[in-house]
Structure formats: C-alpha cells, structure tokens
Image 1 (cartoon, one colour):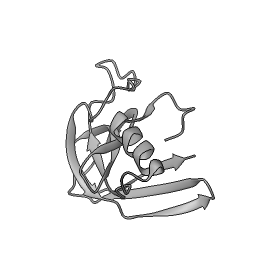
Image 2 (cartoon, rainbow, N blue to C red):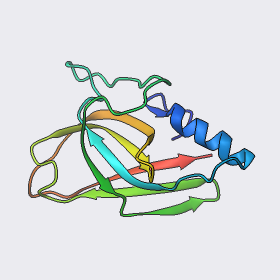
Image 3 (cartoon, one colour):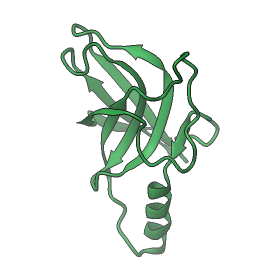
Image 4 (cartoon, one colour):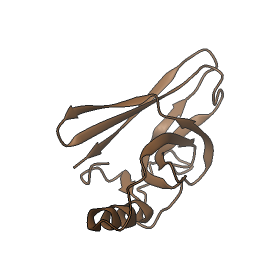
Length: 130
C-alpha cells in the first residue's frame, strides 16, 4: 500500500480506523482476507488509477482468507493469498483488495489483467508499507 504506487489506494475507511486507533478510541481490526475482481482496467486494458474516495472493488468476484503474512522489513507487512485451480477459473483478475475482520476493504490495487486457468494456482502479494 505504498503511497508511491499510483495504482494502489488506502481507502477512507482504513484511514479513519487508523486515526481512531492511534488516538485509542478503537482497536484496529486485523486484516483477514483478500478480495479479487475484474474491474481494475478500462476496456482497452489501461490500468485504472483508483481514486482516494474508492471504498470497494469496481467489480468484486470473490473473497478469500489470506494464507498468511510476513515482515520482510520493520515497516512492511507482506500479505499473501493463493487462488487454487478451481477458484475464479476463466476470469481475468485486474484488481485486488485487502479486507479487515469487519469486512471493510482497506486497500485496493489495480493491475493489468491476469488470466486464471482451472489447472493453475496463482499467489497474490500485497505489501503494507509505512
């Protein structure tokens, strides 16, 4: 969720939760899954830059619990989620989002279409960078 990547946005819901958690008004809900969609590109394949106001994937197809996370550096959390062969077979995935235990999408990343065959596993990685 690096601020330097124009194809990634931290949602307003996430920012509101962060500011409230820092003040001690709430406990920050943990990230529990990844959402997958096919609305991250224009008809011609151009990747859409998600606006700051976007709160959901443009065309969410599926949600799945994350496989896990690692901390490759002190200020980075790397989330991973693997789609098995039968999951989203035949789809062209072009957007993913992290969601928290309250079900809110907290981050959206758009990218070029990735075709999904039924005999292939695909692992998606999204880094939370501070």
